[in-house]
Image (cartoon, rainbow, N blue to C red):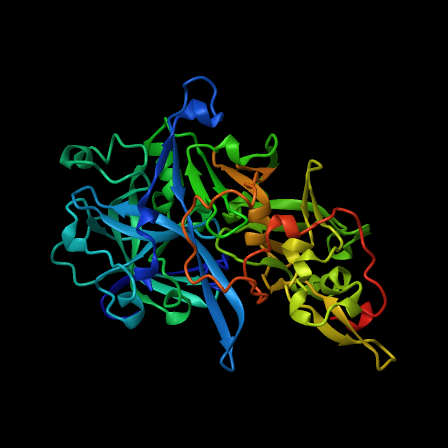
Length: 491
């Protein structure tokens, strides 16, 4: 045990947020918060629930380079929260992460280059802050040691200490009187145990513009329930419906957002279909998968009904069990039709080339369905056919192999951006269930109404992770297309 540390805790977050993980680029508009009338949202019965709090999300792209060339883009979505009950409150941008449980901010006690890239929480500027041990006990003025926690996110890690603080997802207080009322009156403010980072690894925290992480996983992912923001919001403000919802726009500049206190029916294309949280004692928003189909073929790895899927707002790819990845790549591959008519491979966007549907049947019969647009690498590959010198262009899937030990793994999918962009998802804390409806996306001809993307790739980029092509130029048919000859050569 290191000197100056009373107790040390280690937490492994299953979220890949930071696996796919410079503040001046963040738009000032990110501080906007919408308070919608509950009745207008269509998500209440009578006047029993308070207003819907909606925070716009901004998307950032970070290039991954190899030999001086961009080979892919990492992405993340983040919005603004405020900390402290005294003016001026301290604003921070955070990833709202369903795959982890704690609220984490870099502190002024962290002097590394990585922390210096971000806004850092200043304990001396807050009259509402209380330095605490992990169990909430205030630290004595003469204390020479205090509890610390180490939290791992994919390839990244945070070392931090604890403070109790007021954290708000609503608009900033307009005056001192409102600020003084934050603890008890404002529905978007929560008295919360917070992790203040004293060390943050450069990979990935030094790559992205967001300052911290707001974990929205279940209480089991935290050291104690008092660390769970949404759980504490529901307990401290009984007028807030214990639900939050995530909408990711299909295109850059769209109105991506997270809503607390319910969901916005304008984002729904149909009634919500609900699926119970599986193994909720593990703390993840995950569902049981009865079967997986690629076209008309059942994936054998999940034929016994033993697969599950974690919904993770911090992951930018579709994660699949490593044991199934090779098979899925082969089954989802298809050759590019009419190849001779193309004079340049850059004319081909595989996200527009028809392919099999990838369908996840959940317990209860609901089906989460993805098309070629959702799972394909944009650029085709030139593959040599088996037992031949002939080559053809093939489209391949973009899947993230996932290795997780029991009890969470090994047969677990991670539903990141590809699923969350296709479906509007609602997370019900009280009933431990997740609602799904296909997201109602605006027409491409509509003027962008959301926040501009940070670090967006050049228009027309076909690098993995680049923005989707316009709807009007992407047929995205629901019919099947055989993969064609030579699929055995595609791995």
